[in-house]
Image 1: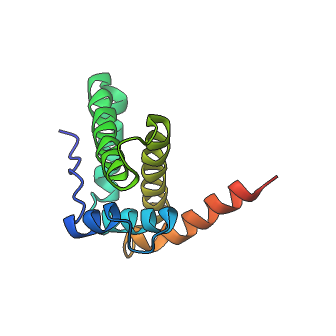
Image 2: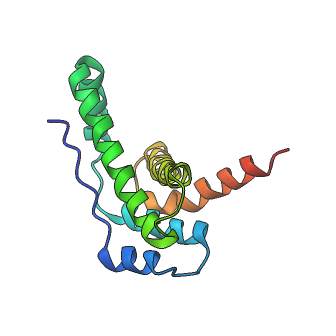
Length: 138
């Protein structure tokens, strides 16, 4: 009813990430994963607005949307665990899973704010730059 599409991470991208690539550094490799997620056709601005309005009006739909987000985060955490190992603390997996969700959502929000032209992935590097700047603040 909300029109939310399932995520579809390219198996080759997922396998390369899990194997420690493409760069061997976690953050740049997460950017590759997020870029692949953003390359998957996302729903347009009108459908996002309609889905959000429906979720605001009907709490049961909001719960469905949150469950969808959690399922996607769980998939990301499983992928990260494949890379980092079974002994990776749950809090670290959760942090990375939430980070991927934030990067994805923020890139999509920037794309929307720019009028929805082009693809959302074009905004990912600016989002990562903003995140790095925030973390560098003392």
